[in-house]
Length: 294
Image (cartoon, rainbow, N blue to C red; front, side, top):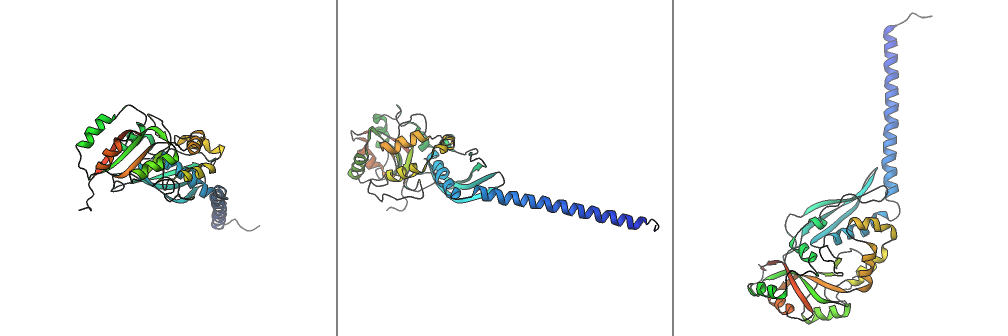
């Protein structure tokens, strides 16, 4: 037997510990990489990325009808979730969104459940409140008439025009043509004290556009096409956006316009619209001068 060498023994022990630690770290790294890549592949299989933005991105726009919302590219993944970003800024009269819009993340877990949502009924802009009030007793015609009388004719307004009785698609088209005006969004249900289903051009980024055939700014066919994509298992997530399959399908099927949002309409024209017997009231959300008009 050779003599016991303490130095050689210590070196051997250190080499053994280093090899063991290296193997363990390599195995852990491989497992983490496999979990990350594997989870990403599972979550993005098939058309899940496209469907996530189709359903959740569009639902977020319906959840925030008083905002200009842009859906970003999908998707960022972690071992436990998949997400995409949206930017949102409150709508203004004629001049577009407010400066300083925020970025928000929409995410779902491995089981497809949506996480906590920003904005929605807590946003509380004047346009949100005007949509909340559709069907309510606030802003009777007499009061609105007095407010409009105090404003300059050429001032641009952001307003919700509410009908006395809901208009069928052809009647809505005729109304808009009669006043040579456009609908930024159309309200397809009466849901006083809550946000109604409100749909406009660009609410769904895909699908066929009507290009004015249904009335300027009206995209009922686009709403119907998007609603046709929805499945029963989407209902749980839609309810997180204060929506439901039943309400969406009813609104798309009936196509009745209870109100519409006008974002580029002169005060002088709003006065004439207010006097139309088909109009119940007009709810002002914002006014602005067009600084580019002489």
